[in-house]
Image (cartoon, rainbow, N blue to C red; front, side, top):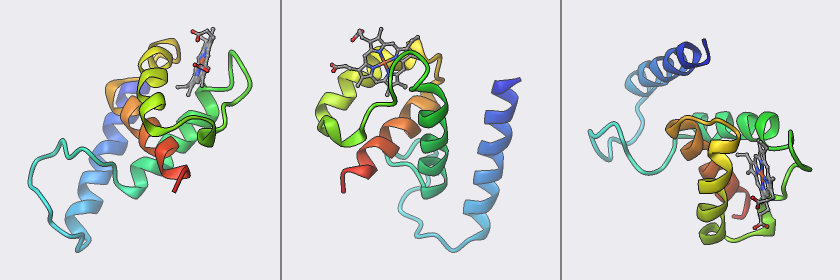
Length: 97
Ligand code: HEC
């Protein structure tokens, strides 16, 4: 069910990104940086999934390199998909700026 929602929302994002005049940087679907919509989704996932076992971590408490390692160990604990892993990471890193 979660997967269906993820696919549905991804499809929506594709439609949105095709209809808006976003800068066409590349045609590859797996661009390394997330869209603002995906980062917003990452924030929601972060708030819902990352405070279950411990206090919700402060995104500014670690640097972007440390977060790579933390997310590699925490994403499986939170049962995130690869996409969700990426969005949560991009959200966390976006907070620092
Ligand atoms: C299933 C339980 C569980 C979930 C869900 C979970 N964590 Fe954790 N987390 C832990 C445990 C246990 C530790 C401490 C032991 C360890 O580091 O593995 C920890 C430690 C941490 C730390 C401290 C690591 C350090 O090096 O200081 C951070 C930051 C963190 N988690 C972030 C997250 C984020 C972000 C998410 C969401 C993607 C998340 N956690 C989801 C169980 C969880």
